[in-house]
Length: 515
Image (cartoon, rainbow, N blue to C red; front, side, top):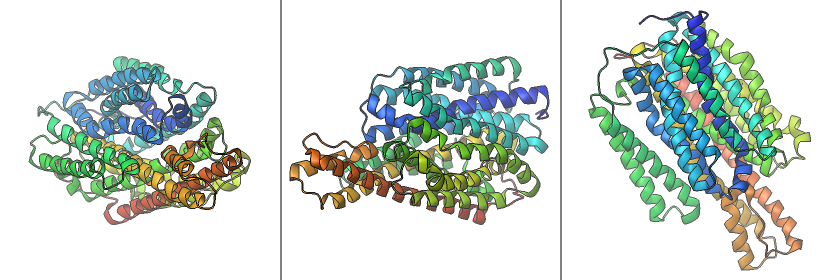
């Protein structure tokens, strides 16, 4: 398969089109976190509704992204990439006009299907098109630009949300997607494995989708019905059973969507474990930080988005450089130190209590955001290069799909598990606060029912004016308690990711069977 130089005209068109399409998906993810408070008020969504809006997309992405990567390898990487972009555009436009939580969840599913075909295609096109000596640099460039645009998402989202235009977070994907489609259609050549005529693993896709959906549903029901209700433990048990069936299918299948032989390579396995733990922590940390800033700390949504600016600046200045260094010296040191530093950043953020608002940003949230950004800047490009470098070009789409699936699956579990934990932490702290407040039993019950709304909890109308301000303070204190717990667990996941790199990743990985 002929490859091209990164600086050639063909190489530049590949890079621009893949960066645009990837950025479209990543903007959607990060900007949505910032507009959630506006969305919650506009659609009258509960805390559980918010997690379903996030998870509807992630579920489809996680369950189908493996098939998306395999389809690109077998049917043509450009063709599947373009099909994914088109579906993602349709889903985005539909999300923008959704009039209810239910419709938004349904259209987020459509976005997820498009993303599953689109996201693996970007790295797969780069890995199979750019010559091997420049691949790390190309992936570093992709990582830097997509991360810059991604972290610009919160700023854009905040500005739109403050203007009452949160729906434009979805509409903005349409022109970006069309531009990417035109570039791909006219400037990029098709690339596929001509000798690969095997079928697709739809049984695997169905079982992993059911497994993830049931586990997510189970965790999201825990705060409402309790762990010992059939809806919770029944869903969790059935979900785990489907995931076990998925592994069995993959072992026995002649055309598995997740070829388990790739995991015989220690670097590939370690990089994916690192991805799972680090991105679970990062996703939960960023979500709860955004909610904390707007709903408790008094930031506008634009100010909330701007708090991530140091993260963006670090990614611009360091990510590509880190990718080049990883090409020369190997990724191991970066993948041990990067996640550990990111974990330290999340830990620092966990100690921030009630602040005086944006004026206190530089002495409260800024140090943690800076350390987190530094850690991620040294991690993103070496991690991607380690994954793609541990398999042959023949499996580039599949490897990209697996690694992206790990990111999305970690997001699904983080949203479901951390969402349930946050409500439990919030409820526990709120109960302690209410003991010292003279309230009748009915009012206490109404106040506790608001715990599922987390930072958007409202004081019941029946509560006296005297107690109203006290209850608002109790809500804020309860949310900050939940936030601190979530951020510390997120930090522990970052440290666990660093441990995975220390144990498994080698600088000169020997590629396994066909990988």
